[in-house]
Length: 296
Image (cartoon, rainbow, N blue to C red; front, side, top):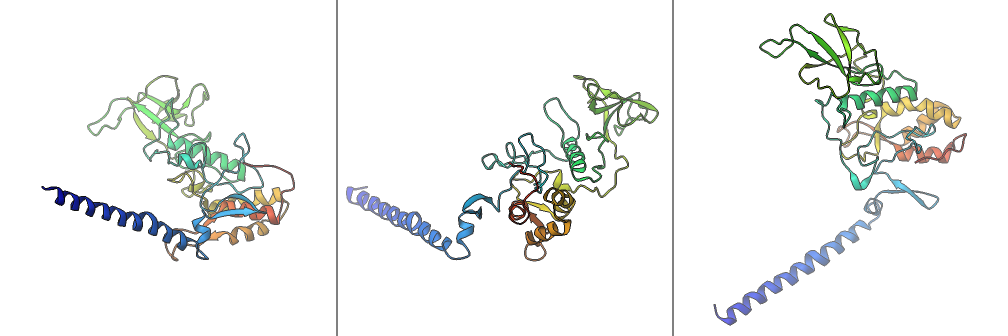
């Protein structure tokens, strides 16, 4: 390859670089920025921020926690769904718990998803004055799971239990397991450090209703950990608490909730949802709480 051909090739490459830089590095970003300034689009481009009296309170696209420094519910505020993002709704640590339906046995390092759900359901039930019972949960709010030890058949099922342990109820916290006996064998609490994986793991459904009073979004985190919405069902069970704290009627609270309820996407995708931050800010404007309680 002679020098003139080499120069032509490099000059062609340089021209292509300059043209693509102008188009993709300057013209396209400027076009997108100008497009985002159009009325109706600029708010979304700026992050859908919500402000009160000139102060930015958050984004309608990102949830927030409405608890005190100890993690307790602030009575006058609707509560968001749980979050697995950092310490809760941390945009720098957006994530899910990565726990699935098979996570039913607690370990020394981590609670199972089942126990997390049971614990949250019991807590929400107490806070909202509804039945927090769920299938496969003990009355104490942990996963109702047994390790059934004994000889097994060809399918791996224990045929004659010789020992039964409630694996999620340590003896340090309970001496009386949620179930007295299983197939005629006394149920034991779990001893610290003992491995019960040798047994057949059996979840016990219990007598909780198939349709719990505490909705699923009240006890599970979203995939991103940043979901700003809750279901209408979860909002409904919080109305009386919020109304009492603000000294107004439940119907007045429901009107505000309805004003911030989003319908199904395109009319048929998903379910209607309530934006928690929008509701709480609107309530602070219309019906300030009786007591001066600051939140997170």
